[in-house]
Image (tube, rainbow, N blue to C red; front, side, top):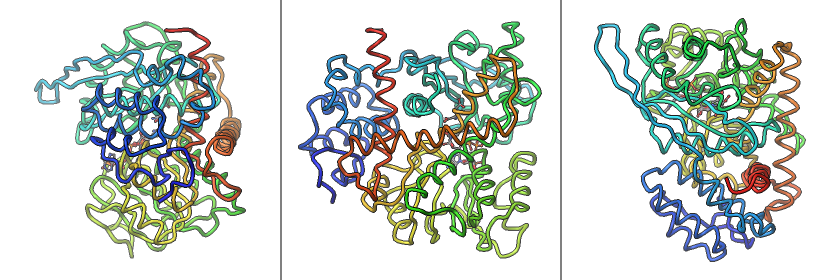
Length: 484
Ligand code: NDP
Ligand code: 2IT
C-alpha cells in the first residue's frame, strides 16, 4: 500500500492498523520517519500512555507535518513539537451538586488550556459520561490547529465533565452548571479563555453557565460563546458548524467540477452539528438518507426533507427524545438498532456524532459502495485505519479540523461582536462564514500542494494540508514569543 513517497503520512498506507498501544512499533516500521518525530512520538507515548485518543490525535498530526519540519529546521531547533504536545495548563476540579430528590452527586470538571500562542484559549465544553482527561486533551490539541485555520486570533482549549445531562431535569442541569462555573470562573475570561458548547452543552447549558459567571464576577462580558441572541449571542452560531462543513465540502466538490444536487448523503448524529448540516444539504438539493444517535440509525430511503427535519429538531431539542421515534412517525423508514449508517450505499458521508465512529472496515465499505466524499462534522470521527482508506482511495476527504471549523469561527465572530457591542445581520455572518470556509479550503489546499508529495492535479491530501497550515501559524508565533 502507498509508499510511493519518501514521507510518512497517515493514510499513505504505510501504517497498517496502528493501535494506540503500538505507536512505538508502528513508528519503528517507518524507515522514513525522521529521528525528531520518532523521538517526540515516543516521549509523548510514554508520558501519556493512558490517553489513547490524545495519542491518536498527536500521531496523526506529527506524521503528516514531517515535510515542513524537514524543510524548516527552526521548529526542531526550538523544540516546537515537544512544546506543542504539552498543554500550557490543565485544571481538574470537583463538581458537587444535588439532584431533585436532594441526593448529593460528585462529578469531575476539567479545563485544558492547551495553547495561547495566537490568541486566548478557545474551545467547547463537553458534558458526557465518557469524558476524561485524555479525551479533552485530544479535543484541545485538535482545537489548536483548527482555530489557527479559521484566520481568527484564537488559541486552543477544551473542557467539560463526566456529568450526563440525559434524563436530568432542567433544575438539575442548572444546579450542575452553577456548581461547575463556581470553580471554572476563576480560570476563564473574555481575554483569557472563552468556552462554548460541544456534546451535551447547548443553549440551555450556556445560559446557566453564563448566568452564574455574571453573578459571581459582576461583569457582563463575552466570556462564553453560543449565547442566546437577546443577551449577546451571534446569529448563525447554532447553524455554523453544520453549514460550514457543507460549505467546505462544496469547495472540495468544486475542485472536481461537481456539486450537491442529487447526491445521496449519510449523516450520523442528530444533535446540533448534524441538524444544521442536514438543513444545508437539503437546501442544496441533496438527499439525506440517515441520522442517528447512540442507540441506532434511522434510514429514510425517500430522504429527510425540511418538514421531517423540523420534526427531528423538535424531538431532539424540545422533547429531548430518541431518534428511533422518527421511524414510528414516518412511513417507509427503517430503524437500524445499535448500527451506524456507514453500510448504506451513498455518494457522500458526514460523521457528526463523536470520535472514532468510522473504523477502517466501515471506511472501506463506504468507498466500495461508491462514496466519493467524506467531510467530518464531528471531531476525529475516523480512526487512523479509516483515514488511510480514504486517502488511498483518493476520495475527497475533509478532515475535522478543517471541515468543522465553522463553529468555532463563528464563535470568534461572536467574540468580535461582543467587543464591539454590536450585532451583525444573519447575511453578514453567513457571508463571513462562507469566506472563512473558502479560505480554510484554499489554505489547506495550497499547503498540501506545496508540502505533501502524494498530491496531484486530481488529488489533494487535505489531512496533510490542514495540519501543516494550522501548525506553521502557531509554531511561528511560539518562536516569536520566546521560550514560554
Ligand atoms: P450534541 O450533543 O448536540 O449531539 C451529539 C450527537 O452525537 C447526538 O446525536 C448523540 O447521540 C451522538 N453521540 C454522542 N456521543 C455518542 C457516542 N459515544 N456514540 C454514538 N453517538 C453519540 O453535540 P454536537 O452536535 O455539538 O457535537 C457532535 C460532534 O461535533 C462532536 O464530535 C463535537 O465535538 C463536534 N463539534 C461540535 C461543534 C459545535 O459547535 N457544537 C463544533 C465542532 C465540532 P445521543 O443523544 O444518543 O448521545
Ligand atoms: O469542537 C469545536 O470546535 C467546538 N465544540 C466549538 C468550540 C467553540 O469555541 O465554539
